[in-house]
Length: 138
Image 1: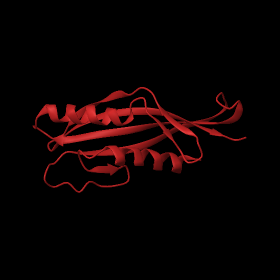
Image 2: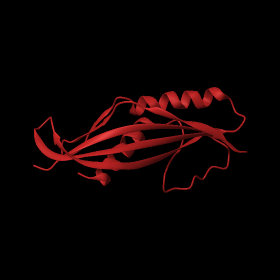
Image 3: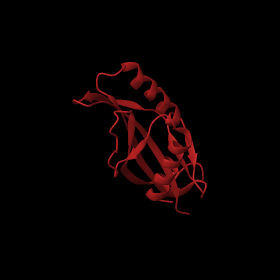
Image 4: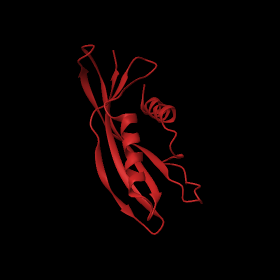
């Protein structure tokens, strides 16, 4: 299974485990006029390498990618809100293994901050979740 299946599994994981704020994806414009918190999710396809997949001793492709989560809270609001949302989003992805319909797995291990910033309306905290997906060819 390729990138479309990976995206579907990641989006399902988030939709099944996230109720704190509206979710907007990298191809959507947020419709937020009441300054309520929200998140933006981007799937970054980083690379694909031919590998010997050790779990099956067969040749395949290892897909590398990153899920980028941007948390937006109203500028000047309680800083604790952003931290609480960050804790919740980390719980959704850190050290998770997602199994796709074909039995292949998406594996998340670490995560890292990409910093934050503020504009007149929003404070943004960005966090990344690198992952690997092994795709068997034989």
